[in-house]
Image (cartoon, rainbow, N blue to C red; front, side):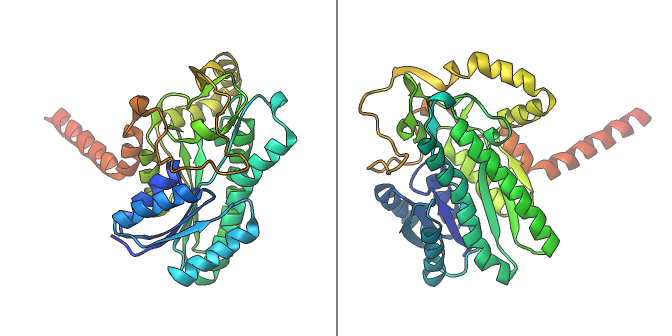
Length: 327
């Protein structure tokens, strides 16, 4: 249990909602930043039910001034910020040729510049104290882009480049502020039901799919380690490493499977909600509609958390084997 002060952007639903709960369950005071007031109220109830202090701040992270003002409110009402989690995002499901410049700009302002604005607000407070952690919620798609999500993939690549630059600057300055990035797999979140789409059928995450609580536990863990990056899910590791070895093979595979793999059999309805410019009303919670397909645990992430014990066990087994051979 801790008395940390934590800021989570995109906290009204999905990964942000689950992350707020993960920190609150350990005793943290949590500031919830997002556009949707209905979802924020639901997230507030979640945190309070777990016994955590909570501050609700309706904010569009694309507005740098609003993010800065929110950070000031957090420190006034909850205390010095220990951890800032950048998580807010939006996406347009469409081929590049069917996506407008305005849609690209908006997706970039939220998903990339939202992280920049959050990071700057956090640094303004953490650097003078020479402590604090910034967690950039990333994705496998920050290493391997896929078709139909160019707006999102481009922003995630940009976040990784921005974070690498910042990390080097902090090392140059000898700062003890830590920045980490968590690369997530496909997740069962509400985004597939409310993001703007120009596809004929309902968007879906590319299997294997994990529940948002898997991501939340990884984000919490990463916030308390000194790891540069944390990969979550065997599919993430395989995709990232495979793309480094043979990106041309990934291009071909995604050209053949990337369109069908991101759509269900259900047609997109004419009254489908769209959160690109305005939040969708209602409290949508952490989960999307793919509960039956989603994994609740990741063996790969368990191994990452317990790598030292696994290494010691491996050394012990090797030692026992050598001893047996000498007999």
